[in-house]
Structure formats: C-alpha cells, structure tokens
Image (cartoon, rainbow, N blue to C red; front, side):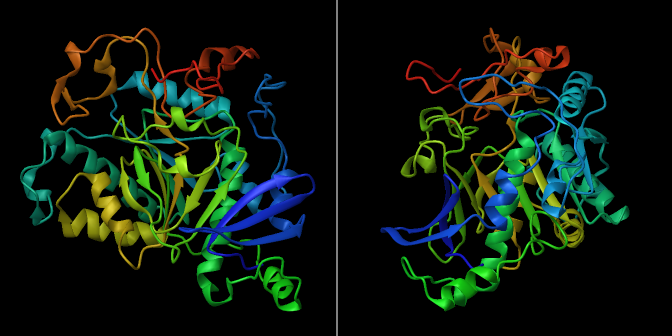
Amino acid sequence: MILPRFARLTRTGGRCVWTAVGILGILRVVLFNVSWVCSKIEDAPPSPVAEKPLEGQPKEVLVDEEPKSLIDDVRNSTLGFEKIFVVSLPERTDRRDRLLLGSKVSGFNVDFIDGIHGEDIVQKTLPANYWKTLMPSNIGAWRAHVNALSEIVNQDLSSALIMEDDVDWDIRLKSILQSVAVSSNILLQSSTNASQSEIDENSESDESRDAMDEYEPPSISPYGDEWDVMWLGHCEMHLPRNKSSGILLQENDETVPQHRFLRSFIPREVTPLVWYPQHTRAVFKDVREGTCSLAYAVTQSAARRMLYQMGIEKLNENFDLMLRGWCEQEDSACVGVLPQLFDHYRREGSAESDSDNLHITGAEGTRLALSEMKPRERGYSPNIRWSVQQNLGKLVKGEQNLVDQYPDSPQRRFP
C-alpha cells in the first residue's frame, strides 16, 4: 500500500482513515477497510503495562504475552531493538534505581553505560577537530554517548536504543511504540515509492488499489528496514517544512496531552502541533532542530558512521547538536516523533538533582545556580500523561489509582 507523503491516521469504527495534508490544507482522502496496518494496532496483544481509558484506571499492571509477528517485537523486553543502553554516571545511584525500577514495571530491560566526568578525559585523546570552548561536562557527556555507540559496533548489534538516566515515559509506552513503528515503516516505504504516492480523492481505480497492496510489513526491524536513527526522546523538534518530506499524524491519541500542556526547550514556545487536532502525535522524516539526546535508537550501520564522524573525526558541538547535524545530512535517514515519547523527569525537592552541572541556562539565556532555585513541592515530567516515575510507588505496589499529569481540564497548569 502506497500512501501520500503527508497523511493523517484516525480510527473510526472498523475503518482506518488516511488523509493527505499539505501546507494549504486537505489535499486527498484515502479510505480503506481494516488492513494489516490498522489491524496490527487494533488487534495487538495488551501492553506489558495494561491499557486504560482516559477517565478510568488500569485493570492490570503487568501482562506478559509472546509477540506474534515482527511488528509485535516492540512489546518485547528490548522494545523491538536488540539492546537498550542507559548512559549514567556511576555515582548517580538515585537515577539508576529509579530508571531500573521504572523499566522493570514497564516490561523492558536496560544495560548501563558508565558516564564520564570531562575532567577525567585526557585532552590528547580528543579529536583533532576539537572545539576548545566546550565545558568539561559537555565533553564528558559526549564521550559517554560515543562509548554507547562504540558498544553497539563492538557487539555487532543490529540496533540499540540509547537513553539518558533522567528520562520518563508513559505507562502505555509499548502501545505507543507500536503505532510509531507502523507509521515509521509506512514513511520509509513511501519515500522509496514517492512517484506512486499520489492517490486521487475517493479513487476506486484498480491502480489505486494496486498501490495500496504494495505496502509490505517490515522484514528486518519492526520500525522499518531503511532507517538510521529513531529520535524518540528530546527537548524540542520541528515538523517538516515542506511536503517533499514525510509526516504521518496519529489522531485521537489519548496518551498525548492537550496543546496547552505541550512544552519544548523554550518554555513559552507554542507547540508546532497547535495547527492539528488535540491529542495528535506526529511521526516524520526530515528531522530538524532536534535538541537533547534523551532517547534515540541507532542501527549498526548508523552507529559505525556516527562513531567515525562524531567520535573520531570531530568534536565541535554538544553531543545533541552533533546528533542534530548528523540527522540533517542528506544521506541520513532519521525518524522523529512529536510530542516525544521520552522526556526529562524532575523530582520533588532540590533542583540540584536535575543536573550534574552547578548551573543551567534559563529561558532568557541567563545562568542559574541550581542550589539557589526554589525546591519543588512535587515532581513532574513535561509532555508525559501517565508518567511511570510519578506513579512508580503505586506501580510497584500494584495500586490502580494512577495519576494523569495532564488531564483534559482548562484549570490544569504546567508545574
């Protein structure tokens, strides 16, 4: 099945609706009966952390079922990748304990990659093209991420997810990832068949039906067979600016907060999703302006190229900005998600736990001392509704009254 490059997915009864959208509005509509694409989402086994309606509570906490096909591998113990690595300083036992427990109640396993203090890195080991204005903390973070890439290459892993140790995610992560995987696979195939991606409105021709039949399930990775990077956790990312890039909109996604609650790296910035219906998640190619390397998956081929370019050849920016530049190269196949699936977790109490730097940069570019910031009365995670970290105590006890951080309420405000 070949779909338009700008498309919207909604679910209405027993049918899936794909709508091609462009800068000037609705262009084409394609309706088709329940096919492999939608049936794999709707008929999939329950998530290891059980689903729940928006107004209700989960009936179960853990469900363990064997995956039935490649697309269901997103529900396995490594989320459809071969391994999951977490970059973490050895002394941050607080973060390690939280992330380990959160991953276990969510049904996946992680391996830790020790973080490094920049002061401990010998300068002669840095790339010749080394930006000398970088802070030691930035250099340490760079080396830790490069070590994770090196481990992927060394173990000859087909793919791996790399996460930072202060991330949070929704308890329905595996179901969200399954929808993202379907969208990613369609996007990657549609770019290969771009010349066939134009389907006329309400067309019932044999040519259109033949085009739909050309869509194939993935054969190598549940996320598709031609990707380099899946950037799933970040602080900010822009949507594609023109219709030559692929984008799929997943509507009626109850795991997505309302527009008023969506936040990016710049606190007062309006979400790019404001132009689309509430509770819409976008999956797209042509990743631009990505910030923060909170969670990203790489293939073996990409890890080798990144290890050379970002580890050996140069060190000229913070690691997340180097990842941004790598994804903006023409020969890189990066898939982005907005809103992100992983975001920072900020616990209650002193803000000093937020970072291993003594200062952070504020919204206006000012330097703020963490020790001088007002302690929080409660923790929070931007853009995550059913936060694992916010509900961790309840999840380990098997309690059902979990907290939705951003319910659909005009009175609710961002922390």
